[in-house]
Image (cartoon, rainbow, N blue to C red; front, side, top):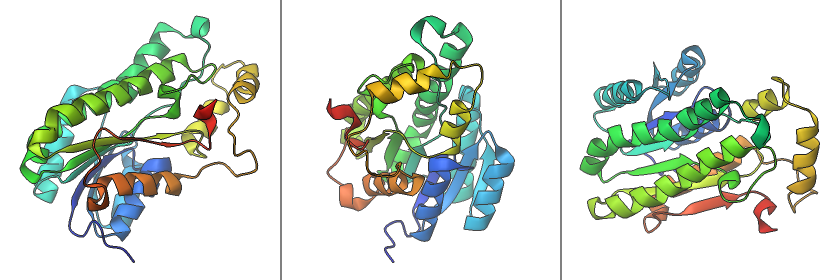
Length: 253
């Protein structure tokens, strides 16, 4: 088994479930020492305990929470080599139907959260010449019907990834992102289950954004975790500002 992250000090968010959990499990298998930050602290502690890591409560909407998480990770790990911004929410709603609250919450969690955490982690990453991997979305590159707030938040993540890659290259810090299409995660299941969203939006979204690989099963969290691991590893030492798209051809036309 590959041990690309032997004794690497990894801070990741959203590790209680979905892509975050799959990523935590992969990095742990490859030797990483982990700190998980998640608003679902019980779920995060369960995952962290199973993997020999630690977990701390983290509220992506709060800059002070980001600073506290980074401080806890530095104390627990002795530094930070990789920051993985995985935590996020999926928001469905046509443009006219998107409430101010939904708009703000989506931007707070999906865009401001990674901004606050990356900003807080720059100093330890500068010391380690480490790297950041953000989870964006193909929706930030190519419109997905009925997801304006989500798409704008993820477009911001993509822009931030490229801006940070440019600013911190001379410090030896690489910054990259993965941009998944639809992934079979609890987040997507919950967002599609209701919450007052008009069910027809999902039919229209499927008709307008059908992936090209229609004979394949949905992408899975471990597949996205593998892409995150590649970008965080020394195998991708020459990659920075890269947006790695995994969408089954959804964004090709």
